[in-house]
Image: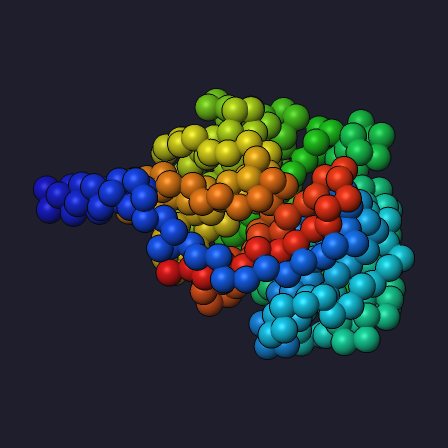
Length: 337
């Protein structure tokens, strides 16, 4: 036990030195993809690793953008959406599932980008989680954005392309989810009521509500399943709260940036990334399951609030929303080491 404490102390001391000025060695900006014809907000990303493509939901623009990662240019614009939010890419089926903020999840051919079908749900389809073992897509629906007094998790079977159930939630603002792959749990951030919801996916039943005491407006969420840790990002004030995923007990909390709309756990390098719309990218080092250190934030861009880590953890893609201006959007590409 003493040796473990000494090792942790050494790691944390090293991290403090890193936080004072060497975070740029962890995240290095290596490229930018400009999207000059987008105004308003953009939302989430998905990646086709084999095809070297990045998919971006241009929420306020009503389009899906396809970016070529080899040339770092816009490859294609797909129109016909209402307010696209989240994207699931299924390489074997060669399909894209796009939550559209309307009353449907749209399925596209990922090669031709033709619309194949619309899967009807409650209005307001937004955040997603995916169960690869059972090929089930979970989508947040309902809520205040579509003038509903409740929300739901719509469950879609991607093998058949059909809605199979809806789990009601007594709240009007539900944000990100995290899915347990080794078990049946689904964790859901219920933002307006300030708790984390735990759902048993086998029974489609709520089994726990864990109140977040350290801050309000819990929205982004990431999960370290190996260490049973949930990373909850709150917006009022900006705070990263780490919870035990077996009990809801708070392990630690650290300050983070304003207007974040993403949280990423990098299991290769044992770090957490939080892109904040204020224009900074926040990083945290995990010494072990119970010890975390905030590193020095990296300047990104105003509106850079969603992000995606490549599967090999070598690139971090950060989407920049231009807000109400006419400056255009972009994707910042960081090398991770």
